[in-house]
Amino acid sequence: MDTNASPIERYLTPIAVIVGAGLIALAVAYGQGGSVGTKTPIEGETYAEVLSAAAEANDIDAEVVAAKAEEKRAAYEALIAASRDQGASLGINGTPTVILGNETVAGLDPALLDKLAAATANPVTPSATDLIAKVTTAGEPYVGDPNAPVTMAYYYDYQCGFCHQFMREVMPVIFEQYVTTGKLKIVIKDFQFLSPDSVEGAVYGRALWEVDPTRHFGWFMALGQLDASH
Image (cartoon, rainbow, N blue to C red):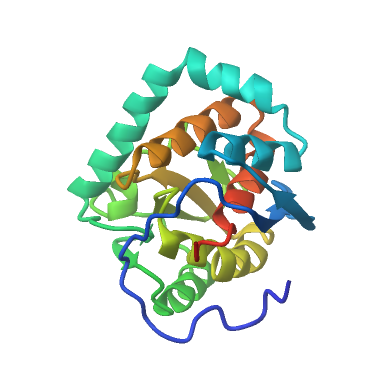
Protein backbone atom coordinates (compact mmCIF):
# COMPACT_ATOMS: atom_id res chain seq x y z
CA MET A 1 0.00 0.00 0.00
CA ASP A 2 1.33 3.44 -0.98
CA THR A 3 0.70 5.48 2.15
CA ASN A 4 2.29 8.55 0.53
CA ALA A 5 -0.47 8.82 -2.06
CA SER A 6 -3.00 11.65 -1.75
CA PRO A 7 -5.88 10.12 0.23
CA ILE A 8 -8.66 12.30 -1.13
CA GLU A 9 -9.23 14.82 -3.83
CA ARG A 10 -12.34 16.56 -2.61
CA TYR A 11 -14.53 17.16 0.40
CA LEU A 12 -17.33 14.70 1.03
CA THR A 13 -20.02 15.29 3.64
CA PRO A 14 -20.37 12.62 6.34
CA ILE A 15 -23.53 11.01 5.04
CA ALA A 16 -23.57 7.47 6.34
CA VAL A 17 -24.20 4.61 3.96
CA ILE A 18 -25.42 1.28 5.31
CA VAL A 19 -23.24 -1.65 4.38
CA GLY A 20 -25.18 -4.92 4.25
CA ALA A 21 -24.24 -8.08 6.07
CA GLY A 22 -22.57 -10.87 4.16
CA LEU A 23 -19.71 -8.76 2.83
CA ILE A 24 -16.84 -10.62 1.15
CA ALA A 25 -13.73 -8.53 0.65
CA LEU A 26 -10.01 -8.15 1.11
CA ALA A 27 -8.66 -6.33 4.16
CA VAL A 28 -5.22 -5.12 5.18
CA ALA A 29 -4.35 -5.90 8.78
CA TYR A 30 -2.44 -3.33 10.80
CA GLY A 31 -0.66 -4.38 13.98
CA GLN A 32 -0.53 -2.30 17.15
CA GLY A 33 3.21 -1.86 16.70
CA GLY A 34 2.89 -0.47 13.20
CA SER A 35 3.49 -3.46 10.94
CA VAL A 36 1.42 -3.94 7.80
CA GLY A 37 0.07 -7.43 7.27
CA THR A 38 -0.76 -9.26 4.06
CA LYS A 39 -4.18 -9.07 2.48
CA THR A 40 -6.45 -11.73 3.94
CA PRO A 41 -9.90 -12.82 2.68
CA ILE A 42 -12.70 -12.07 5.13
CA GLU A 43 -15.95 -13.90 4.47
CA GLY A 44 -19.26 -14.30 6.25
CA GLU A 45 -22.93 -15.01 5.66
CA THR A 46 -23.89 -12.75 8.58
CA TYR A 47 -22.26 -9.71 10.11
CA ALA A 48 -21.40 -11.73 13.22
CA GLU A 49 -19.46 -14.12 10.97
CA VAL A 50 -17.68 -11.19 9.33
CA LEU A 51 -16.62 -9.92 12.78
CA SER A 52 -15.26 -13.35 13.68
CA ALA A 53 -13.52 -13.76 10.32
CA ALA A 54 -11.75 -10.43 10.78
CA ALA A 55 -10.61 -11.63 14.21
CA GLU A 56 -9.28 -14.92 12.87
CA ALA A 57 -7.46 -13.07 10.09
CA ASN A 58 -5.56 -11.22 12.82
CA ASP A 59 -4.72 -14.37 14.83
CA ILE A 60 -7.38 -13.68 17.45
CA ASP A 61 -9.43 -16.42 19.10
CA ALA A 62 -12.87 -15.39 17.88
CA GLU A 63 -14.70 -17.74 20.25
CA VAL A 64 -13.04 -16.18 23.29
CA VAL A 65 -13.96 -12.70 22.11
CA ALA A 66 -17.55 -13.71 21.33
CA ALA A 67 -17.92 -15.23 24.79
CA LYS A 68 -16.62 -12.04 26.40
CA ALA A 69 -19.02 -9.99 24.27
CA GLU A 70 -22.00 -11.97 25.52
CA GLU A 71 -20.78 -11.94 29.12
CA LYS A 72 -20.47 -8.15 29.22
CA ARG A 73 -22.96 -7.11 26.54
CA ALA A 74 -25.06 -4.88 28.80
CA ALA A 75 -22.00 -3.04 30.11
CA TYR A 76 -20.55 -2.59 26.63
CA GLU A 77 -23.84 -1.34 25.21
CA ALA A 78 -24.01 1.25 27.98
CA LEU A 79 -20.49 2.46 27.11
CA ILE A 80 -21.38 2.58 23.42
CA ALA A 81 -24.48 4.67 24.12
CA ALA A 82 -22.52 6.98 26.42
CA SER A 83 -19.88 7.55 23.74
CA ARG A 84 -22.53 8.40 21.15
CA ASP A 85 -24.39 10.72 23.51
CA GLN A 86 -21.21 12.51 24.53
CA GLY A 87 -20.25 12.94 20.89
CA ALA A 88 -23.65 14.42 20.11
CA SER A 89 -23.27 16.84 23.02
CA LEU A 90 -20.00 18.01 21.45
CA GLY A 91 -21.71 18.76 18.16
CA ILE A 92 -21.12 15.54 16.25
CA ASN A 93 -24.04 14.60 14.02
CA GLY A 94 -22.54 12.15 11.54
CA THR A 95 -19.62 9.89 10.78
CA PRO A 96 -16.74 9.88 10.30
CA THR A 97 -15.85 12.84 12.50
CA VAL A 98 -12.53 13.67 14.15
CA ILE A 99 -11.95 15.85 17.19
CA LEU A 100 -8.49 17.41 17.26
CA GLY A 101 -7.71 20.07 19.83
CA ASN A 102 -10.70 22.39 19.83
CA GLU A 103 -11.86 21.53 16.32
CA THR A 104 -14.08 18.95 14.66
CA VAL A 105 -13.31 17.72 11.16
CA ALA A 106 -16.24 15.96 9.51
CA GLY A 107 -16.38 13.55 6.62
CA LEU A 108 -13.37 13.23 4.32
CA ASP A 109 -12.20 16.83 4.56
CA PRO A 110 -8.61 16.97 3.21
CA ALA A 111 -7.89 19.77 5.69
CA LEU A 112 -7.54 17.07 8.37
CA LEU A 113 -4.04 16.12 7.23
CA ASP A 114 -2.94 19.76 7.29
CA LYS A 115 -4.36 20.17 10.79
CA LEU A 116 -2.59 17.01 11.96
CA ALA A 117 0.70 18.21 10.50
CA ALA A 118 0.38 21.52 12.34
CA ALA A 119 -0.75 19.94 15.62
CA THR A 120 2.05 17.38 15.71
CA ALA A 121 4.71 19.88 14.64
CA ASN A 122 3.90 22.17 17.57
CA PRO A 123 2.02 20.13 20.18
CA VAL A 124 0.34 22.03 22.99
CA THR A 125 -1.43 20.82 26.11
CA PRO A 126 -5.20 21.13 25.57
CA SER A 127 -7.03 23.57 27.79
CA ALA A 128 -10.00 22.41 29.85
CA THR A 129 -12.33 24.15 27.41
CA ASP A 130 -10.98 22.39 24.32
CA LEU A 131 -13.25 19.78 22.79
CA ILE A 132 -10.65 17.02 23.04
CA ALA A 133 -10.41 17.61 26.80
CA LYS A 134 -14.14 16.90 27.07
CA VAL A 135 -13.90 13.54 25.30
CA THR A 136 -13.79 10.50 27.57
CA THR A 137 -10.59 8.68 26.65
CA ALA A 138 -9.84 6.59 29.75
CA GLY A 139 -10.59 2.93 29.11
CA GLU A 140 -11.44 3.51 25.45
CA PRO A 141 -9.76 1.56 22.62
CA TYR A 142 -6.82 3.43 21.12
CA VAL A 143 -3.75 2.99 18.98
CA GLY A 144 -0.39 4.68 19.44
CA ASP A 145 1.87 5.74 22.27
CA PRO A 146 -0.36 6.32 25.32
CA ASN A 147 1.82 9.34 26.12
CA ALA A 148 1.89 10.78 22.60
CA PRO A 149 1.90 14.60 22.62
CA VAL A 150 -1.27 14.83 20.51
CA THR A 151 -4.56 12.95 20.90
CA MET A 152 -7.17 12.59 18.17
CA ALA A 153 -10.66 11.20 18.79
CA TYR A 154 -12.14 9.30 15.85
CA TYR A 155 -15.92 8.86 15.88
CA TYR A 156 -17.30 6.21 13.53
CA ASP A 157 -20.13 3.78 12.80
CA TYR A 158 -19.30 0.23 11.72
CA GLN A 159 -21.92 0.40 8.94
CA CYS A 160 -20.91 3.82 7.61
CA GLY A 161 -19.73 3.81 4.00
CA PHE A 162 -17.72 7.02 4.34
CA CYS A 163 -16.07 5.56 7.46
CA HIS A 164 -14.95 2.61 5.33
CA GLN A 165 -13.57 5.03 2.76
CA PHE A 166 -11.78 6.96 5.51
CA MET A 167 -10.27 3.71 6.81
CA ARG A 168 -9.06 2.69 3.35
CA GLU A 169 -7.74 6.03 2.16
CA VAL A 170 -6.99 8.32 5.09
CA MET A 171 -6.32 6.24 8.20
CA PRO A 172 -3.30 4.41 6.70
CA VAL A 173 -1.66 7.77 5.98
CA ILE A 174 -2.34 9.04 9.50
CA PHE A 175 -1.15 5.77 11.01
CA GLU A 176 2.15 5.67 9.10
CA GLN A 177 3.00 9.36 9.40
CA TYR A 178 1.91 10.13 12.94
CA VAL A 179 1.12 7.00 14.97
CA THR A 180 4.15 4.88 14.12
CA THR A 181 6.39 7.90 14.74
CA GLY A 182 5.00 8.40 18.26
CA LYS A 183 3.45 11.79 17.49
CA LEU A 184 -0.22 10.84 17.74
CA LYS A 185 -2.58 8.71 19.80
CA ILE A 186 -5.91 7.86 18.16
CA VAL A 187 -8.81 7.13 20.50
CA ILE A 188 -11.52 5.11 18.78
CA LYS A 189 -14.94 6.43 19.78
CA ASP A 190 -18.29 4.79 19.13
CA PHE A 191 -20.97 6.76 17.33
CA GLN A 192 -23.18 3.82 16.39
CA PHE A 193 -26.54 4.94 15.02
CA LEU A 194 -27.22 3.23 11.71
CA SER A 195 -28.34 -0.30 12.54
CA PRO A 196 -28.22 -3.12 15.11
CA ASP A 197 -25.13 -4.43 13.27
CA SER A 198 -23.39 -1.16 14.12
CA VAL A 199 -23.87 -1.84 17.82
CA GLU A 200 -22.96 -5.50 17.35
CA GLY A 201 -19.64 -4.52 15.82
CA ALA A 202 -18.95 -2.10 18.67
CA VAL A 203 -19.79 -4.72 21.32
CA TYR A 204 -17.42 -7.19 19.67
CA GLY A 205 -14.73 -4.53 19.39
CA ARG A 206 -14.91 -3.64 23.08
CA ALA A 207 -14.74 -7.31 24.00
CA LEU A 208 -11.67 -7.73 21.82
CA TRP A 209 -10.06 -4.67 23.41
CA GLU A 210 -10.52 -6.28 26.81
CA VAL A 211 -9.28 -9.71 25.68
CA ASP A 212 -6.26 -8.58 23.62
CA PRO A 213 -5.78 -4.82 23.15
CA THR A 214 -2.59 -5.30 21.12
CA ARG A 215 -4.60 -6.85 18.28
CA HIS A 216 -7.59 -4.53 18.36
CA PHE A 217 -6.39 -2.05 15.76
CA GLY A 218 -5.50 -4.76 13.24
CA TRP A 219 -9.03 -6.12 13.53
CA PHE A 220 -10.51 -2.62 13.39
CA MET A 221 -8.57 -1.81 10.22
CA ALA A 222 -9.55 -5.12 8.65
CA LEU A 223 -13.24 -4.38 9.16
CA GLY A 224 -12.85 -0.74 8.17
CA GLN A 225 -11.22 -1.59 4.87
CA LEU A 226 -13.96 -3.94 3.69
CA ASP A 227 -15.47 -3.01 0.35
CA ALA A 228 -18.39 -0.73 1.19
CA SER A 229 -19.78 -0.55 -2.35
CA HIS A 230 -22.27 -3.41 -1.88
